[in-house]
Length: 423
Ligand code: SF4
Image (cartoon, rainbow, N blue to C red; front, side, top):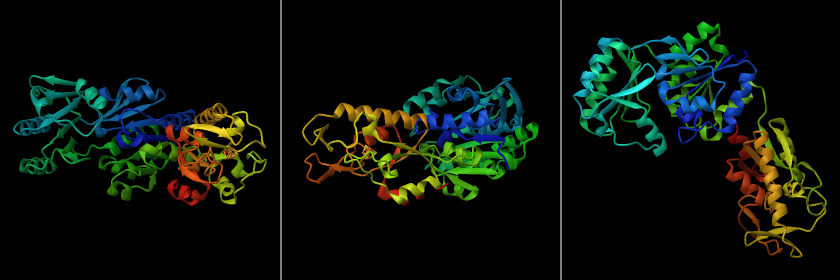
């Protein structure tokens, strides 16, 4: 079935390790999906006020499913189109219970974050980037008395118990997980997220789809944590990230690449856009006579990759203005010299920059490059003595591609490339 809606979890899924950035590859793939008329949603445990930075990076986004599915916002009308809040009695119960323990907790209401004044001292910091934690703290309102807020529709309560090895954490956990008014998830130890009974991302996604006339088989969803499992099982194309917990991967129909390797983009391109992934390849491996001696390094295993990839041929040395045939060159002391001693570093750097520009423009995340070359070699190159001796290091273009997050494989590692990119 054709995909009509894509829903992505944020942390560990669409965002990078900084919990802030959507990679250019993910932005590009989602933008192309949107241009084809596919609706886009993010589905997050966070509330609205802490994801505006993400929304700015995805200006074409249609919906936000927030607070683990307690509400859905239509970003075009800025209206809440679905809401399932916690009953006041339940919220009061949980607030009173948690206030009797030395723990930090917060609740979400009307898209913003609140906590009881004085609870901040229990927030001991997490293993998260400082920039993210600062923004998080700044977006949390400290209230003199949270009890009146229980009346007004609580989306979600979040407990962070940093002393989760203390015996009282078990008491808290047992109480919350058996409370008849809430559903709990625990993405990481010490973190318990509570929504009203029956509320989760899959319910909100289902509600949104019903309002749009979209069937579950036409939905693509991505996630990495236990609060994503329902959504992954609901969607016809439910894909767990490679970095997801084992139970999440076992629950999903598909597993895609990790968040750090643009798993969302790779899956969207393959299953929603019907595109093969782009692959940068050293032109000489494809049979182009661009090698220093006027010949090529044609490699049948590399040529066979055309079945699975959309190949973009590059020859950094040709891009840098060097002709074929030409003198061989090698790297010595951080510069590139021809065999007769001419310094050709500028040509190599210029060719590498053009190669990187092409890779970024075409959205390639992978490259197969000629091993040992002063431009394309990766991990091992000739040592500058023109004797055939090797040393550790990368060619100029390979180094530039690697620094920009493009994964490099030598021609002898084609099988490894196929294994690692299988989704
Ligand atoms: Fe092959 Fe790279 Fe050398 Fe060009 S620069 S001939 S692609 S190894």
